[in-house]
Image (cartoon, rainbow, N blue to C red):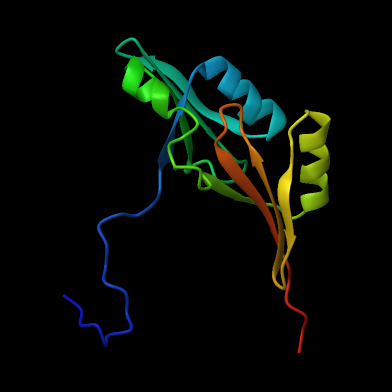
Length: 144
C-alpha cells in the first residue's frame, strides 16, 4: 500500500475502460442518433441469450464505447435520460467544434451553454432521451 506522501500512483487491477452503459428506449433509434448524427461506429452488434448487445464508439478508440442497452422494466424505463441526475453523461473531444455545432444544427439538435474558456471551447446538447453530452475543443497552448 502506498503512503499519502508517495507521489507514485498505486497500481490498479484494470487495464482499460470498456463500455459505459446508456439506457435507451429503443436500440435502433439510439443507434441512428449516435451513428448518423454523432458519427460513432458500431463496435459490436450481436445477440447473446436473446439479448441485443449494441456497442458504439468514436473512430480510433474502438476499445472504449457505449453500450446502448434497452431499458427493461418500469424502474429502468424511468431512468432513461436521467442516469446522471441532469449532469453530463459524456464529454466528447473534437478538433473542430464549429463543425460539430454545424452538424448538430443540421440534424435539428439544440445547442446550449456554449462557452469560451482560456484553454477550451465547449457546448452542451442532449441525445434523444435528454442525456446531456458535452463537446469540447481544447486549445493548443502558445509556445513560450
